[in-house]
Image (cartoon, rainbow, N blue to C red; front, side, top):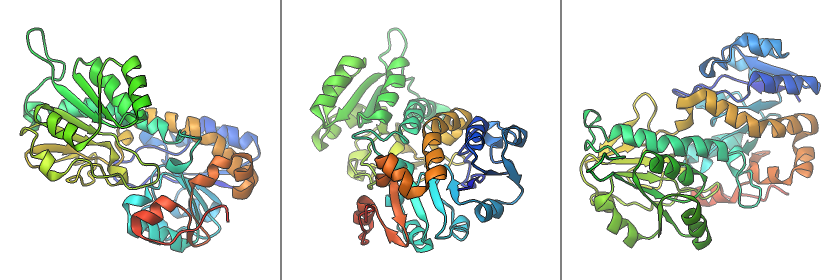
Length: 365
């Protein structure tokens, strides 16, 4: 297979799907790599570095799709990219189809084999999602703290407090990779931090390893905590599925004006009823007096770090797919089967099918 790396065209998305050293590893294995000009510019990787490692640079976005069999991206395909996808293509990227019915139907109709990073699973782990969850989790506490500032419309609360003044309270919904990283930063800057979780073993682990409090996640717990919460972080993930709406508009009214919600689950529809996707260009809006930060590609803000973290985990799979094809790669690394969201004009992800009430088939078939 020829591997193609297009420039990301989603608004304010500066990540790139492969670093130059990764291209070099593929080329050494005899794999041709086509990279769109300036694909890595947003992450500070110039074309020259890709060329030095053996990539062929093309000037048009369309040329990547015309010349490559395996398209490796960061974000889901935009409408203009859907038109470029063919049944002979394999697309390897974040898809997050459960939040977008139109994209799901359009992608399935192309006949492409779409493999989603976020549904490749090793037991309970999602190895291709974890690095971006780490970045987004750490970012969430930082951006939440920033928008609490009075000049940004916030309540004017410094999360860490100062001697003689109590710190702000951060509530994190979800104790997975994203939630843990959010809590690490929140506690690191001195905030009172509470993680809501439903898995008792996970709560014991969090209690032992983090300097924060844990509480069983329930509607009653949220009603109890929200009136005194300064920053609410939604870090809920149901692999491949639409995020459950755990915070209703009515609950949000319990929060004080000028407090902040960061809904990291926005890629999967968000866990707050009032969530709607925003961009880095225009990241926040206000509902019920509460500032909402709902950027759908949070790690794109730190494009170089995020690109490096992402390609560290995706490159072995890219190499395997390029050398062995989809079927061969799935035999060697069975976890890839769960990543297949569509193939040959058929939806193959149960969670996406359930989210949109669309028929699906087991990808093993």
